[in-house]
Image 1 (cartoon, rainbow, N blue to C red):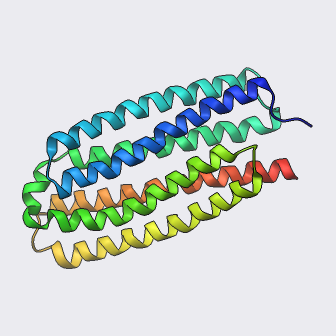
Image 2: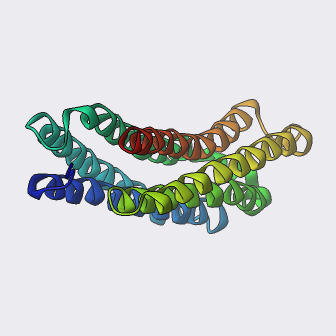
Length: 224
């Protein structure tokens, strides 16, 4: 039975457009961390934050358009539920990226509290962001391969799972370091804020893994 026809192709183009915006959001997020912590360039960080918000809005519009097309008859009925969930999980990735940046910008006084430790903190957060960012990139690649190459899609999902685990390890390591090395240097609010930023960065890869699980279910359902 043929799965991909004209309107299915058009729908996938829209889903991939959303993925492209999410991928750019992830890149901007890592650039934001560098600007905020490493360069202490608040103007640049705020500009990147605004760009991330703009991209999230556009990705959300793509999501709504994609789901609307599903409800209008694109794809087989048995696939629509999982495809709707995939779109929602992708939206969750975008939301968490935006929330991560918002968490840092919520209290810019954090930089003055960190003083000379800002670069070290930024470098440690970047380790988490790198793994989460790669998980997002692999997710985008997996969606791009959907209905084109099942085996390669599965390999991308496996990579996402590995990257999510690595991101979790770096996140836990960061919070141990924060507690042991920074507790006597920082006020309680700054400690909470940094812990939350690290958790949000980890949640990006968690959300990517959740979306990957939907891809696994889709492929399993199609292959039988």
